[in-house]
Image 1: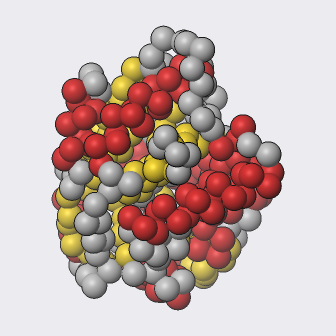
Image 2: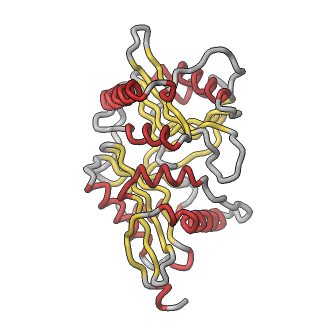
Image 3: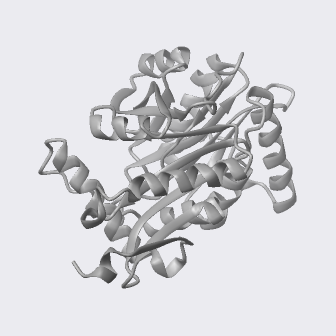
Length: 321
């Protein structure tokens, strides 16, 4: 390796023309991670560019990369702030530059970015079986929390019933409802705000938001989902819930019904919901409806910036793109 290839500078803000090289580094780095965990046959495919654009624009200046002396991408970290909730991911260091302290530097840069944003929660998710990752993040001040469990429920048969969607509203009413979503989220967990994710999802045409209202028309729940394939070139197989807020946790039964119906209308086979471990009622509700456990992630939070479960209600916030 030349001296120039080893010299690393940054962070720089990720640009649109960085996406092809960024996707290659992502695929290579995470495939190598699986190989180290004993799954040599697993190859992580490149992500859908639309998902990258959503994540990068949503993160703003938190979408950071580092370059070597030849101008090639050496590492990246995407630090997201949803109001006072901050999290990092994905992040990776090029294989030939690992074990040089660059990983610690990019995580610290993410922490600094989220603290500058005023985040009171700072976290990330990693594979629970990967001891190296857990030890690495622990050395930077992160503490393991509960698991996030990904469950999938089959799409229900198509009917005339249409779940209420944010995209069905006119521009003025849509902004008003996004405001309602912000108010509901902050009533359940003060400081949280998913307005940017809602707006960007509709602008990029990669998903929508299911709305739940009570008999008087008051908003009592919403679920932001993406229905474009996560992997570049794949067919649409599932809709993926990124954020879900409910005024009361037992409302998950109604939301699950609406999401399964929407999965069919989106042309998907199933709906994927990632449930944080503290929400046992929601987990049992989904299992009772026939949902299957597909994956687990370990949620880790920076010391002094931990999540606080709400006294009532539910906030599911996906710390992955």
